[in-house]
Amino acid sequence: MPTYSEDILRLAEANVIPLVTGEPRFELANRLCGDRITIGADIRQGCVHEIHWQIEGCAILKASAAHLARTLRGNSLAEGLENISAFMRSFEAGGVASPQGPMAAVYSLPARYKCALLPWQACENFLRERL
Image 1 (cartoon, rainbow, N blue to C red):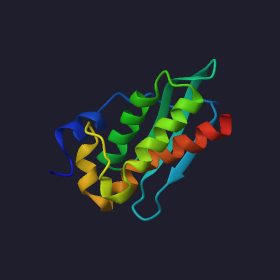
Image 2 (tube, helix red, strand yellow):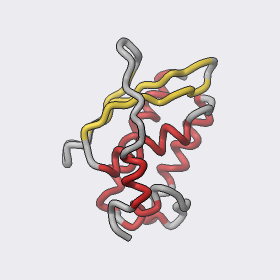
Image 3 (cartoon, one colour):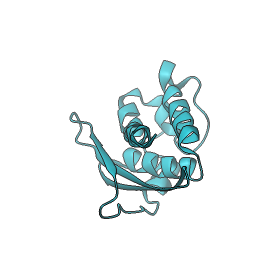
Image 4 (cartoon, rainbow, N blue to C red):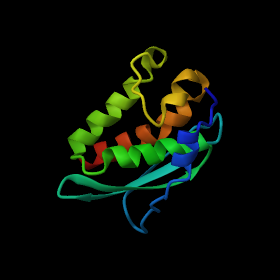
């Protein structure tokens, strides 16, 4: 399966919801490849309404951030953290337990796991700071 599948490319081009000036945010970077993401969120009544982000990096990083935003929309903070944990666990043991879906192409590319996980790790830290 090619690295940049149609699903990955489609997600990478998804509409980015930009960061809001003055909103709390969390930044994380992979110093090895230069990927960088800054995550913020509109949290209303303890639920994730929207994830906002700014990215410098590859299509896998961008697609993963878009997938994260879609997955967490409407989740409580606790549900969001559970979904983040499940996604990150899906990469353990070479993606054996990986769900099918838009990020499926990445599971066969262990060298690209960090690209896919970076938005989820940043969001996990962001949400934990809000608990």
